[in-house]
Amino acid sequence: MSTASASLTIRGIDVEVIYKNIKNLHIGVYPPLGRVRVAAPHQLDNEQVRLAVIQRLPWIKEQREQLRSAARQSTREMVTGESHYVWGVRRRMKVVERPGRAHFELDGERLLLYVPVGTTAERRRELLDRWYREQLRHVIPDLIAKWEPVLEVSVPQWNIKRMKTKWGSCNRETGRIWFNVELAKKSPGCLEYIVVHEMTHYLERNHGERFTKLMEGFMPNWRNLRDRLNEAPLAEEEWV
Image 1 (cartoon, rainbow, N blue to C red):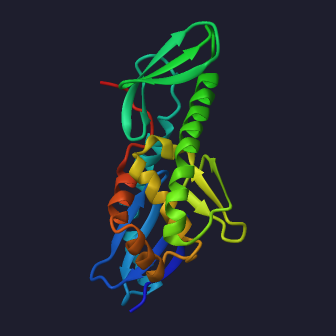
Image 2 (image 1 turned 90 degrees about the vertical axis):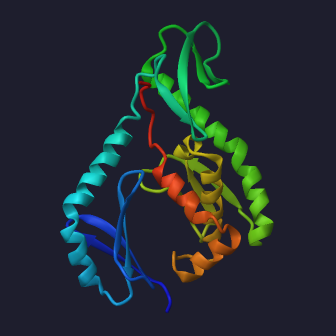
Image 3 (image 1 turned 120 degrees about the vertical axis):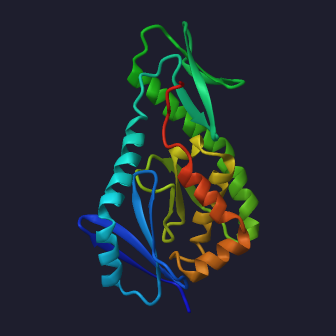
């Protein structure tokens, strides 16, 4: 039996429903900001899924609030002692105030920020965002070049932006792929999974059975990488 999907809005919450050949209904709440996805047996209809979700609303709202609280932690003062994730590794930041060009450097397990005296926290955050984008721009072209011959597709254009609810997106009409700047904080394998995921949308628009089979053929461990991505820390954390 084929996989089907539906989009429901339940008590103001958007819910993605995937009907599968499974016995039990499963509800998941995923980063960055609490996307709700339901895996449901084929024998259930939308109304039965809706009732099941309503019964779990207190838990869903609690999970969403935890994720959003974690996301809000990303606003930091950008001072020595804070930690920031780079390619899945948590690094302690050291701020060095000195004249000259403001920039970031990696030094072992440390993330060094060189800035002129008096640089504001807002400006430091802008510099970090720019640096994360640079990291992605160095890596993504090689990943696309690696997978284009495998998928037998060509990526005409791609870019990076900050997205609240997705790690990536693909516009099949224009061919443009967008990558979330937050991916620079995750492990390299997670980024590669998103690259393959979005490129697979050139072949299949929806997340149905055909999409799943394509992903399994291209990247058999894609589910593990997806789970690692969704379980990874969302934001900077203080060292304790």
